[in-house]
Amino acid sequence: MTRALIVHRAGPGVTVQDPGRPGYLAYGLSRGGAADRLALAEGAALLGQSDALAVLEMAGIGGEFEVTEATRIALTGAPMRASVDGTRIAWNACHRLEAGARLSIGAAGTGNYGYLHLGGGVALPRRLGGCGTHLSAGLGAPLKAADRLEIRPDTGSRTGMAVAADDRFGGGTVRIVASLQTDLFAAGERARFEATTFRRDARGNRMGVRLDPDGPGFESEAGLSVLSEVIVPGDIQITGDGTPFVLLNECQTIGGYPRIGSVLPADLPKVVQARAGETLRFSFVSLEEAVAIEARARDARKSLRKRLTPLIRDPATIADLLSYQLVSGVTAGDDLERSER
Image (tube, rainbow, N blue to C red; front, side, top):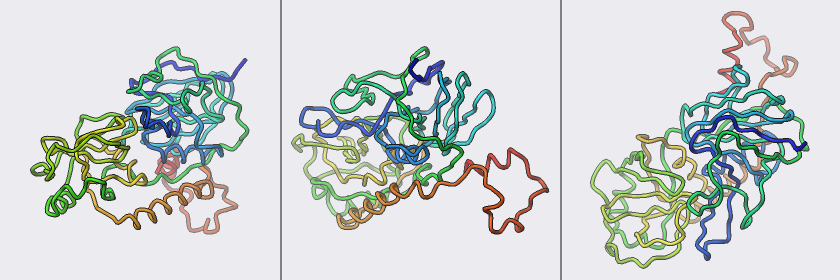
């Protein structure tokens, strides 16, 4: 019998995702894939496997799951309360889930998108080069109770490891580069855009998010006369009323609204994970700076496996063991809370 994940309960935004389907823009299909691609890399590092494998993406809330055979799992992205048969388990970590045990994943405490990774990855047929759900293109559908997903063979065995999550939750400053249409905005408008604090609007999905400025909207010298052309995730369109929209993974492939800039891929998870009401600011960087930033981000993803730490440390490996308070006030709950930070 094939190893499988059984869905007993799923939030409305639980889908299967992978890195996406590049190369189909000319045919009207955007890349799609996981909203927070860094979370894919973190889970792959925890399980020692490829970040191209399919995972479960959970938008806002998870669900309840069971495996038919013992399976390694990892939890990354927006921290959600997770437990196995009622016992809390750490986020940003990998665990062994026994056959028949119930994995329950609740609502996100911060951020928007959490991820459940399975040792071996979800086994789904590849269509157009990927197996992730692309809702706006009609490829796949959200998971629901009673769904059963086959799991590919797992060649790894390590569990009980944690990864320090990159700080991308709670908004902050996002770096952008000039787009082909940035010069359509006067220098004063560009400077005001950088000086403006935006709040993430409640309206948003995997196609894009609306940002509300703390002042008036923005105008381009071309108005709305821009011809439609190729657009990609990260582009910041300014609509007719001057409101910015940051395009995300399932955005359309062409658009006619002027683009004031484009978010660096390394910073796009910060936009993705900002919750409604949280603040974002934008800072232009040169193309040369952007290339260097992306190179550092790529190196950081590659080094994730070297930066894993055990959830439970062996006292024999702690050089300054005698400097720790080992008795007073220590509880299992304290250890768990520390492991989740």
